[in-house]
Image 1 (cartoon, rainbow, N blue to C red):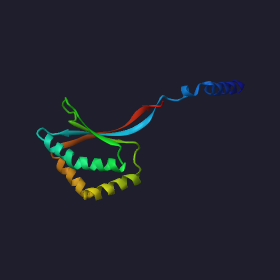
Image 2: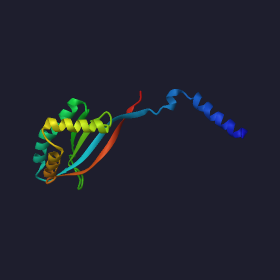
Image 3: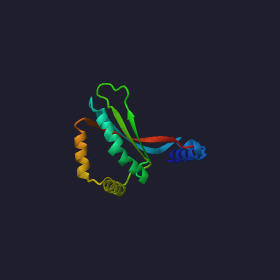
Length: 146
């Protein structure tokens, strides 16, 4: 019993004796990046680019202006191998939205775009004729603590 008590006291003394910066991990959480993998069928690059330059850009710029999204990017896979996406659509947020924030964003966006959730889904279905959402990833940036 005495040995266990001494070992416990020794462990506490070691953590107290360590410098504060040695106890901290040098990286901390930063922005959240949602990455959508998009495959565009041959011959439809211009069609999808038109959508991105029109409706997508208008939606994303509105979300940035309202603070729901920090930034967004469109990245092209320049040399895609078989089965890889053509594009990556990246949305950057400083935090993951709560359900209430998500609902407010969606309602505001629908009002701004003069649309409904059903119409948005129908539009996605039309684009599915020439583009495929291959998957999404949620990444968190790691930034230096100091």
